[in-house]
Length: 256
Image (cartoon, rainbow, N blue to C red):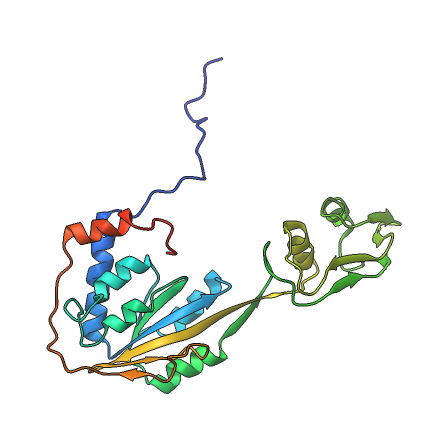
């Protein structure tokens, strides 16, 4: 029988890298946002979740949010006084490390910082998360589950059996201990039990505001009270194609 042309294997482990056009577009958009908005925040994300980022975008519809390769964002803003797009904004570039993003906004600082302070989204833990509490299941019926779930629960390691159509735990079972690193099976059990152990937070790291003020906001940073200002002549230096290409050549494993 001839081989079907539709029967093609597609690898899901390979993704294409962002090309030069994407980088140039991001550089242009970041520079446009820096010219348009009064304030730029560097924020860090803890427990990355898509829903949380959507909430951030929803709360700041008139602002611009960028999550991308740190080196591209840093080069777009300028890494030194000679290359920065606004006076003193190169200090923001130095804070772009790890899993972070940029928020360009003209909203009042009280509103922005209040959002950062109060926003937290509970979610189910994934493999590798540290357990925030000890969870132990007592021997007996698990009436919250339909009988059809029994094979799945047993495959996750729960000592279960069906008794008169009810899933029953045949002995006490410790799902996890507080402080323990969760494995995939434990994370799945906690999700089935509707016990969230992960939090998505957006933490402000630092802020630049016009005309040239810079401040570190991270409370665990020794520089948290430092405020910088400069009165150097602001010169916009365009990023050359060679400089953009350097982003791919250096540290391919940087957080995006």
